[in-house]
Every structure is written in structure tokens, then in C-alpha cells.
Length: 582
Image (cartoon, rainbow, N blue to C red; front, side, top):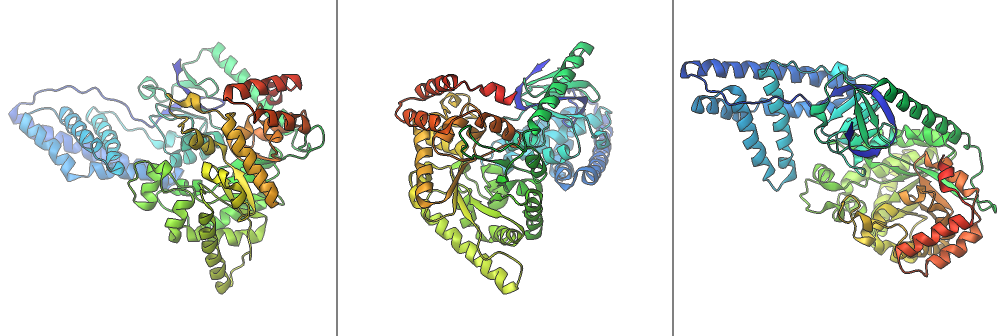
């Protein structure tokens, strides 16, 4: 049993397919002078065989899984064909009269150390390509045949050091059962993809690629964060019972789809869905969501990385979404590209702290030529249904005004071309930067709706990276400062007569939802599976009771005081937050 991190929930039972490669033990062996040329020829034969393996793998990856996964092997081929890399290995064999395995090992280690010292991240990342190619070459020198990608079929468990988001999407759509990764945290894009596709994922499994070999039967327990290797019959029965129980729960939850979403005293509360991938729209509808409250359009980019999706590709995606959820609304958040990798690919930037840098609306305004086509696609698709645009990372009124100028240019251009499009389109902003929350009353006069993104709002307001184990304990959604920002935002929206929703993870937590209703929210956007859970919970609560409770919470001084107060009020009201999710 291997212990890791529970990243994406669920149980997966299947045979393993490792895409991390087999590790080869390397020893230094002397080579007699008269055998040096033979040793170099052995190296060259291994290089040719490894190149053939990679070419075959690349072609099959392209056919079966698309060019995104194939590009990984293209990068490996470039390293393998690098005359400088191979020249250094041959020189080491001649100069030190050592075996090819030792020369490959030493040169690759030296190159990795060189790349890791670079400040530019895309050069640092080359060290991983060198490492992977070296392992492939060592396998060939040892006579180990490369695994055929045809083994990646439905129902298998992928074992790897890590997966980039595009790999996760392709493999997930190909029907894999689960992921077991050496790396990977709960807030990564790969984690979001796995949860969106309902593929159990356990990360943080140190050494898993050496522990598990191809065809091993494994169980991935994404609920507990563990992987069971060679499970006994009794263990298999136990996990299959858990699978069956979860399936029955899903069936019960889907039965709530026709229930009206309202509080016990009759206050309607709109429940929308957050989605990352277009195929989640059908799931959102099946769970009874009243539309898409947040479509994270940057996943269109991530899926095609390093290319940007074309205007036509975006238009078709948005149009299909509208058709899938009609007559309900679809709120599309413009590309929120951030993080070192995405910033580099889009901008060729070298930001030290891109999370606080050029991302969201700032990136949109700075690179208007890139985002112009997204605006055209959105305006065209809006002619087919209720589409609304949502701007991420807004921190000031000026950014909204600048964006409106961009939007007006796109509308005028479509008009000149006589392309079918809307003349006006609802525009909203994410309230996820503290400065935006503090000027919510001013922002409300510039836009048509708000969407409160509590994930980033809490992190920025508390100066806490919840992925950092040293300070994660400070990530407190019920901190009085957070509650006051939510209340101020809701009040600002009400005074201006615009809609306001909350789309962060806080809204999906049953123990927080009653308090959010008390703070004045009447719209929550959550992952599709949380819709029926919240619907059952909301039908147990009385809005006036929680409005009074929220007012009292705003007078408290610490997160601990608020948390204790909320727990007491849940008990007083007889609300079972655990039962709502059962």
C-alpha cells in the first residue's frame, strides 16, 4: 500500500501502464583500448533503436491521443538527435575508456545540472527532457524494449512521475480509469482536469514509477489518497463495494434535478455550475444546474498549448455550450492565463511571481491582439443564446473601461464584416482581488453582474498560499475580513441593481452555504456534483434565521469565533450538513 495525497476522489481498479519508463542501474566498467570503437558503435546502434522507438511512439500518440501528447516525444527526439549531446558521450567513452552506459549517465547528469542552474525556466525544464532521453537510451543499451503506446486503452491506470494538463485531458478522454503520480498537488491544473473528468487521482507517491510495473493490478483510492498494489480478493471486494455505494449515491443525487432550488421559507437560490471542459455541460444539466455560472475558457488554451485556439474553434465551443444548456445562461470567463509556464508560452515573459503579475484582465489588455479573437468568437456565439462575459483579476474601474473599448472595437469590426453577432453583451467582473471588493460599489456602476471568486480572494486577502504547507492553516474562509468583503460586494451589487453570484469553492461547502445565504447571496456556482447536495441543504434552512446569524458573525473578531458560532447555529437549526451530501 502506497500513501499519497487525495487529489481527485473516486475508486479506480485496473492494470497499470507506466509512462515514466523503467529505471536502469548503471555501473562504471573499464573498456580496453582496442574495444573503444566497438563500444561507440554499440552506443550508436542504441541511439538509432531509441530514435525508432520514439518515432513509433510519437506517431501512435498522435493517432490515438492527439498532437499534444505526441509533442512530448518530439522534444525527446530533438535531444536524442542533438550532435552536441551525443558527441560529449562519445568523447567520454574515448577519453576515459568507459562503457557507454556510464558515459550516458555522467553526461546526462552534468547536462541536467547545467540546465537547472539557468534562471530562464524553459531552459531549466530541458533538464527533464535530458533525463527522460537518457533513461530511454540506457534501456536500449540494456536491451529493454520500449513499451508500445497501444497499451494505453480504456480501463487502465496511468502511472507516471507527473502529467501536464494536455496529457491528462487526452488520456482522460481516451477512457483511462485512474492516475497514480509521483508529483501533483490538489490545486494544479491536472488535478482540476482529473476532477472534471471524474478520474481518481492520487499524487505525491514518491517512487511509484519504480514500485509499479506494466500490467500490475492496482487500486487507486482517490478518496483516501492511497494506491494498493496487487490487491487481495478481499480488498478488491471491499473497493468494489465502495464503487457500488458511490454509484448509488450518484443516482440519488440526480433524482433531485427537478426539485426547485429554494430555502424552506421560499427564498429562491439559483444554483449554477462551474466547468472546465465542454463535455461537463451535459453533466451540469443532469444534476439540475440552472446554467453555467463559470466556464474557465483558459482550458481551451491549455488543451492546445502551446498554440492558441482559433476564433472558429472558440466560436464552435461557445455555441455548443449554449445549445447544451439552453435556455439557461453560460458565463464565459475570458482567458485567465497565469503561472510561469503559460506566461512564457503566451508572452515569452520571465516573471518571477506571475501569480501577482501579468495575468487575467491585465494580460488581456496588454496583449489585446491575442485576445481580440476571443472577443469576436464570444460576440458571434452570443447570437445563439444567453452568453455573458466575465473578466478575471479585475482590480480597478479603469480596467473595465479599457476592456469595453476592446469589446466595442470587436463589435464594430463584426458589423463591418456583416457577421452575425449581438449588438450588446452582458459584462461582469470577478471579485477576487481585495481592491475590487473594496470598490465594489464603484465597479457595480460599470458592469452588469458580479461573480465573487473566493479561492483567490481569500488567498490574496490573507496573503496565504494554500498550497504551502507552512501557512495553509491560515487559509480561513470564515475570517471576519472575508465575510465583510463578501457583504460589501453584495450590498454594492444590490444598490446598483445588478446580479451577484459566488463561484469559489467556499460556495460548494454545505457548512458555509447557509451563512452565504445570510450574507445576501441568492446565486451560487459550484462543481456540478455539488448542485444536488446544496439543493437538499437549502431546502432545510430559513433565510431570515441566517440573515440574523450573518449579522452577528460580522461583529465577531476571529475566524475561530465565527466557525464555532456557525457550528452552533447549524446545530440549533437542526441542519445536517453531512446528511445533505450522503
